[in-house]
Image (cartoon, rainbow, N blue to C red; front, side, top):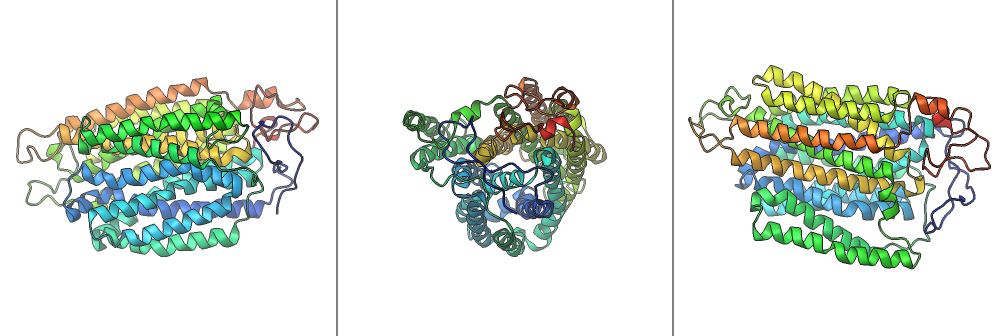
Length: 541
């Protein structure tokens, strides 16, 4: 069921060039189709997380196969992140212009092709190149989230977004043990081979079952020059940050990529300002990024991504490293019998996924009444507390129990905070907004693993049979403390956000014929002449 086309909105930005369809309501939306889109997107999440989920516990095996060190092997993560970060704003803008379904199909088939060849990598350089192309997969989720936002009425968006956030936890719960089992018993290459049919299936299903977005602006020209400069800038910065530990933070390579990335900002700003003066639409709407709720969401999820990857990288290695190193691998008593148990590491990370899943679902049911800010603050503080407790854990059982706490905090934080973005931005700009949020989130995530690797390779054991080979327990503690501090610092920025949910707002605007712009800046709110109350803030889901 397609939306009816409405007239141009009175407060539309001057650069916009298209009309906006009538927003979905509880009476007009196609429930079956909306649920189908959500379930299909959930399937895409599962497939992507299956592929990515096996990589973390397989890093040691990949490192040995290609004869690279622990710092260099993280390049397969940072190359993926650099491409995804660089392409996200471009793909998001293309989705807003030409249609999110059309762009998503191209992205998914490109991702399927790169996944197909990665498993056949003859050497490390080839795998890094394949993973670089595979990074386009990071742009799938912003497009999917935008499509889903368009199909649900505003009052049901928090519930749908919460369920999608829960799928990340379910995805980890499935992908980590399954991917680890396939990788350990059949090799990490088989994990890629086994995923190819499912990636292709998801792409075909999107092609067959998903309708094109009604929010399109085909008359808008793409700012390709600005896109090139922005992509080069983001790629240079991400590569420098993610590979600084491998190359050395003061090495010519690290400084060269960092300087290159920063310098590319200059022509990007020049191009964007020129387009703004010419009343043409730039690749990134600076006014959109300065929107208070958008800025807060970007900051919080950047920090959340950094903290999560710091902790997960450390946890995976702790599960595989010997007890003398502060790890939990009791079978590793000497260098001769120290076998890395990939499957065990995948299983041991499950409590985090369980906590994330359960509390993301819980958040989806209560966020409309409780509000975003209280849940996000609670989630961030609980996550930070979990990181601190993890630093002092000395047994596997205690560590697994604390993992549930960490996952619970992450579930609360992620499932609540994303609503600030989704319920603030105009649907016609949703592709760009979610794509830029994806940029910030993945910049944080791409830095987390190499920073943790830097700590683990710097603070090594000085005595015993593992001296100079494995990290000391202090290295793991330092990573957890850093993750906790960063998480707290980022989470407190939620205090500066403008609440869009909660009991007070329901009561405050229950009798207003329209919701004032100062209270909610989303442009799919009822027009001034429309006497219909704003549905989300007048009643809960």
